[in-house]
Image (cartoon, rainbow, N blue to C red; front, side):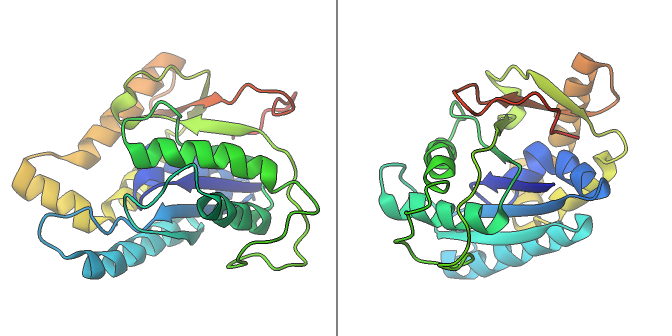
Length: 241
């Protein structure tokens, strides 16, 4: 299968669903991760132009640990608005390129405006990408000859710390938890700063949240998801690993 995870910032996917994606790779899936935004405003001291490059390299390093292809949506922080055609079309391009059997993205009830905008854009783009006669957009990853995407299920990944998120499906990531944390630790620009200046061990928080989801489903560690329940996005198959 082809799996596409679309997050907002570099490290969002590692926080919420890296264990699941690593498990997908292990079963033979092709996995593509798209970071819609560069994360260039995610530091107090490092300037945006410098941080943009650092975070792109961190994301690629994290993906390489699990055999995941990483692509970039082309936006900077706070530049993503779900009402803009350009934003939708950039995700159409990524979706057609990845040709996914299912998509993972942010919950529409997440805590950050950039996250919720990406969630709504994915909902719009995954339909637009199926239209055969829609091809008037910038092709950064796909080509004008790339076939339209299929209409596929969308799964919403956990919110930060699981706030206001009740999973309907779980993935046992007991065997992947250490890899998940190693992938997260690749994002040094974020984790080191939080440890040294904010006193927050973010990797420990993510591990603890995975443990909590594991308690809910009888696993040592797990990740939780909720399927988007709308017409034609349902399935009779178990797609998550």
